[in-house]
Structure formats: structure tokens, C-alpha cells
Length: 624
Image (cartoon, rainbow, N blue to C red; front, top):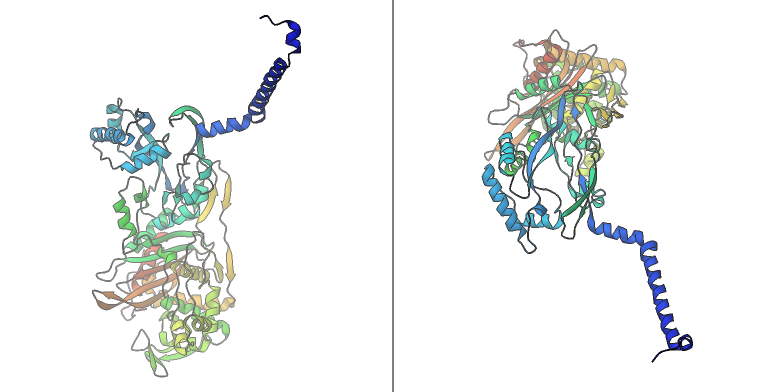
């Protein structure tokens, strides 16, 4: 039947159908408008999120150099073999682990290398980090690099990559000062890690300057953006932002002086059967700059490179001799008689002691039913203040220290910075301890006795210091009463050469004693080196002032108690216009304080181009 035009125009069914079709088209157009125009950016972003991957590229660390530009830490290329798991042609249902291990077995056989990759690591890398190279062998020697290039052209997946590795050209020199690096943990870059799909971590400072200046040395990471297909294989490389190298850190230390200090310390004789351990600090007495710093035993920071066997690193970290411990700031010891100049100054300042005060030393001092011995059991006879320092008479300090009182002694000790961190810019330093009556009552629940004051006056009791603190004491006497903050970072420059930090002398405090009182103690310290117990520190043609000290302690050796001696020396030179201040500590010293004083003598002699004094009056006893 033929439908006429009027019928079509008036047919309500056709009009309804037409309305439905028109409405559907309108809804379809609206949906297309919404998807393509209104929410187009949203779906583009969603597509990119599913196919785009951002890869973090770590930056090379900046250099560390000494004050004269000698390189202490920089980077070298490490030739590593890695495998790209997404380039091995793994079938859809293929076992990626088995194929990877088979390829690595062939490669290892060709190069004479052992594959130590675990199946679990390969599977995890394939699932989460597939576009990234998976490192297999690190730090290959040139002959293996050449063999790789010659023999692996037809093997899918492996590649030779070059990575920057931290190196320390001078080996263990200044190791505790410079520190070392390790791979960053997720916690080290918690904010940064969220920005990247695949995260390659930086090296991060773990000790010393590497740790203290880490934010400047690490630089800024770069990035690479790739597009991957649904299988996770790289489809397009969309661009790369180069990483920005870290800044340059210049230290105050002088490599020449560092070598002198380490050699002199390393030649100190320990007690028979004991390993040498100790510390020494050399400061510029005028500025507080650390010119050299040494702690023994030491370590080579190069062992923390990626190619070092794990057992070698564990052996160093777990060594009972604690070679990783920086004894200059991280260990605390009783200072022994090196504290006596502080006791003398406290007595002079408080008015309790005068330079002319004399005490008769019979070799002992008695309080109640307790007898305190002098190191010279025969006694020193009649002793005045200057002689008490020169001969290190314990009895003089027992009596005059008791008269001075614990409060006056601790007040002056605090002015030298004892009992608190020095502010050294490496951080992680011990506070030490200057005991007081209030401290003993609070911490030990006991009364402060006169015997405690007697012991404190000669640097014993509960008193604890670090070698860095005692170097600051020596420097404070050297510059006649100004306590300076020690620092080692001289300058930090960004990668474009802009200075972002400049180290400057920083005064912590001034001694409240009068200049003539400070000078009297300095003169007594000069006498101790010229003709006293510190004579082994003397240097021909150079005026050296200083003070020795010996602190005894007990240790267990083969189940038996053995009494050993820690040897101390603090001093400065030249006397009139001091340049250097030093502290030396030797644990388990063979010849008591003589050992530490001899180290200082070698350092001063070589630093100033002089020779050590090797002749000593036979009648002088060098026990303290």
C-alpha cells in the first residue's frame, strides 16, 4: 500500500518516532559535547596516567675539597651491566624469570661472571619497574667491558650502563671527617618519591661532611618521561630533563697537615697486646677552623662503593675496635691533668688562690679516712702555683681545688665550653659532662662530698670531655680567653658557582677571668713544656705551651682486670702569637702522657719545619 503525503504528515506514530530519534540524537550530541569538550582534559589526563611513566634520574654528587683545592671526594664512572626485561621478547604466557635467568647464565658464562640475582627480585622488577634497567653486575674492569661489547651483540636484553660512583681519591685520609655515602632509603626522599612512577635513588651522606652537607652535595634530580603500551613495554620516549650536579664544598682542613697529624698519631705506641686507638684535633687558634682531625682505628670510605662484597662492609661495621667511631667528637673521656689549668684559673679568678700560694706535697693528701695519692709518690716538696702546673702536682690541686670549691670550678669549665656541644658543624657530637652537687643529687641520689671536689680538681671524678672540646680549651688559652666555635666547612658553592655558605669565626663566649690571670696560666703551661712533665712536646726553635694528663681505667683482659692509661696532651704554638692549638688522646698508651705529648711534638715540628726535642733531663719524671 502506498502511503500518501497527508497521511504521513498527520500520522501521530511517525511524529512520535521522529521525536524519539531527534531526542536520542540530541542526547548523543550532548554526551559527545560533555566527553570531548567539557571533560576532554579529564579523559586525556586519565589516558596519560595509564600510559605515561616518569622516571627519576639521580644527580651526581658535588666535590669535597680541602682549603687548597685538593680533591677529597668526587665521582668516577662505574661500568655496570644491566638487563631490560621488557626487551627479551617474552611470550604472553612465557616465564619471564626463567628466560631472564637463562639469558644471564649465557652472559655470565661469556664474561666469567657469577649471576647472583634471585628469582624474586627479577619478578618484582618486572612487575613494578619494567622500563628501567635492572642492574646485574657492578663496576666491571676494562677487560670485561671489552668482552661484553664483543660477545653479546645477539643476546636480547642486556646493556652496558655508566653510573656515577662516589670515590675518595686519598683513601682513608680524613675518613671520619669526610664520611661516606650509601643509597638513599624511601624515607630520605619521602616527598620526592611520590612525583615519579619509577624511582632511582640518589646516594645520600651517612657520616661526616657527606652527611652534614648532604642537601648541597646531592644536587637536583632529572627526569625522563616515556609512554608504555598495555603490556608495559616502552612505546615512545617523550623527553628528558637533565639532572643538576651537586654543589662544591670546600673544607678548612689542609691535606698536608692532615697527613702529618694522622702519621704522628699512627706512630704512637700502644700498650703491649692492645690495638692503637685514639684521636687528635688541630685547630687554627685564631679562627676556630679545623685544620686536621684524626681518629684511629680508621676505615677507607671507598669500601662503600656498589661493587664491594657485603661481608667486607659487615666486617668493618661490626669490628669490635669500632673503626667507624669518630672519637674526636663521639667518644667521652676523663681529661685527667689537662683539666688542671682550668682549676688553677678558677682559683685565681675567685680570689681563693694567688700565684704565690704554696703547698707542701708529701706524696699524698688525706680527707677523713681516705688518702688521695700524688702521681709522684715521693712527693714534690714545697710547691707554688706555677710549679704545680709545671710538675703536675696532684696534692697542690687537691688542697687548692678543695679550697676553690666545686661551684667556682664548674663555672669556669662551662666558660671553656665543657659540658655542652662545641657547635662543630658536623653535628653528632657528645656533650661531655661537668658534674656538680645538683647533678649528683639529681642523677645519682647522693650528696656531693669533698672527695668529689678533690677528684674533680685533677680532671677525674665524673668529669667527661671529648678531644674536640679539649682542643677548644687549648685554643681558648692560646688566644687569651676567647672560646670559638670549631668549624670545618669553609665555603659551599652551587653548581653554577654561586656561594651559598661562607664559614666565619664564631665567638661562643669570653672567659670572665682577668687577662693577667689567664696569662699566668699560659706561662705555667709554657714552663710545663720547657722544663716540666710536658717536656716530650718540646720542639727545637719553637715555643710550645701545653699540659699533659693521664687517666687510669680498668678493663677485663682474658678474665683478669688490667689497669691501663689514657694519655692526653693539650697545647698551642707559637707561644707569643699562637697559630695552632692541639689536643691528643691515646687510649691504652704505652708510656702514659709521654705518648700523647710526643705526638704533638711531631705535629708542631713538621707543621713549622722544625725538629723535635729528643733530649730530656734525666732527673725529670714524665708520669703525668
